[in-house]
Image (cartoon, rainbow, N blue to C red; front, side, top):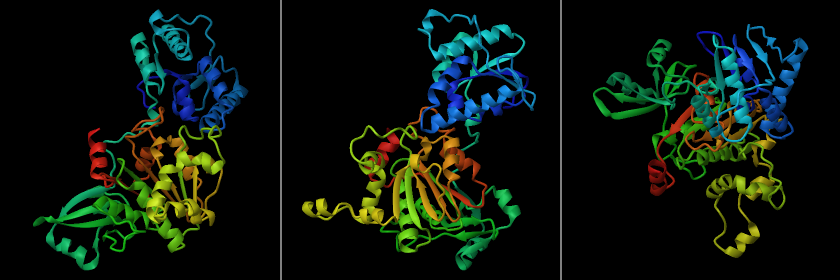
Length: 450
């Protein structure tokens, strides 16, 4: 945290449940964890999901600090700041308009008491709760979002850019299938490894060449449309051409695809996974997963066995498999007997479809791992997932940062956006933003207008 002067930060529970390492991110400042936050952490610590794991991590960290002294008085840290868990006997009462006592109001009251007692030091309430920040402002308490959770970007990285070059160099692209591209020029143009560059001829802007920057070979390589299709799927626009190019490249271990609903993100990822697993045997297994929101929610209340419990959550994935493999026989009777055609691939272990709950703790070597709806993951959660990747495993993250169901993340702080920004310079990662919906004219219009 960059601050002009020493501050006192009052930390809300949702910050610690979002990032269990948050207490270490306020270097050089004094951090206060209200006792009501500890009470809330205690209620979450038994949960068998990501929230419970984070709560337990915070408890262990604070308990470890007790060896250095009393938390009620404050523990001085190596970087010069401190952490304190105070118990205020006489916290100021809030106005009656703030409603009955609640943990939010107790945290707000603690922040106000600290501000009254430390007039020379700025006291800041850090919370991911929008309404609590508004209430703090109404009470005269400075309130901020947890800035370490947000990706600071001037503009969203799309993985695609355009450049105009002279005719001689433009012709070289089609003549040799590539264009020499020196590091100095890459720096001048501001392109990243595996970024796609749409080249246009200076004497005829209507002519273009689709290329991808190969940082190792210092060149732009021509990217062409795959006429044979991938399991019956054909690219319908430039971004889909680019996405297929990344998905089928073994040298790229991490691919991120974002875009609005209907742009073909999940369908293309699964189609390429089937080609590389079932047809070409480059990977041992195709694993398709998505978070059951909230991540790790207990699904035991649903009737049936495990597959029946998972079916409502995994239905979007099964729909894409149905489209790729052929939904069913035309006869209703045969359909009931034979079931979906992808069942054989599931039975053979070629495809695994499961929630992220069951991926944690596993090591996945030689797998083609697709994580759908990755925008609902926090940066800490997406790190946990990616670190499951073993040797020769390809990880594909798909999602739409504008369709988030997780109340603790937004378009600038979700795991998918975090990975896109952090990995854009990595030589083993590639990204494409898909803009044009191809599901149907109605779906595209609805995604744009509604």
